[in-house]
Length: 275
Ligand code: AG3
Image (cartoon, rainbow, N blue to C red; front, top):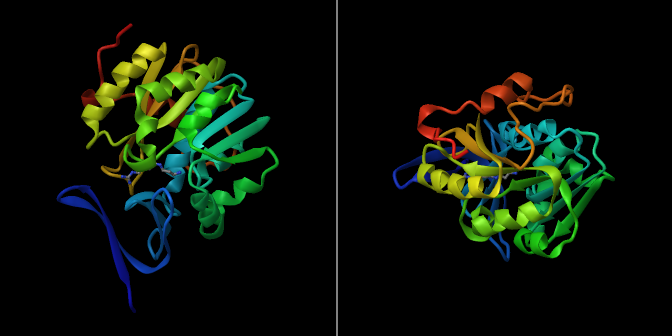
């Protein structure tokens, strides 16, 4: 059988490779290069600028851990904002909760359209009545909107291309202004194994901005290093102490034990608390 190989370099000399059945989609959008491959082992795989964003096989690790720790720590989340996340996976997880509405702000309309077609398991959530899809630059949206949210989720890519600004201090300061009192932010933060210096610097500015600025961890087998880091940010909510009782049903990864253990950090990621 004819196959086509693709790979992502995680360092100049290592990475991940797939032997795909075929490439089902490829396009240069105004923002980035977008590709979808069909694989035997991981189902469909989405790449942006050559970086694996999601695979049908292991997307649940990432989407459940980006969304549920924040949603389950907040006593009553009603309005949710997602920055990025144009594949719909984070939105799908958000909509498992009894919320009033979720706004998804994705810069690249093609990501939404193409995932709607090729990743029905992720993008079905776009049809939900509670979802509002906005095609806009998240960094601009957050500065211009006067709406406020109980939960803000940052589902960005690595700090390259259109996602670079979504990793900077000024962006987090702007997010904070759009949170309701008691609100919570969760953001994907990168690979502890390869982005450790970046994570250390980021934690310093996040701790200046928020009373609770905590990293937590979860596996994502197809991301660099296999272990992924997320930031939990709030002025009121301590996710190690506050946890609602009933998690959504039929999750594959997240539960209350996973929640508690995710905030336990290994030695190399610990820092001396600033407070
Ligand atoms: N957002 C995080 C992707 C980071 C992957 N990085 C990499 N492969 N180097 C994923 C978006 C999924 N909703």
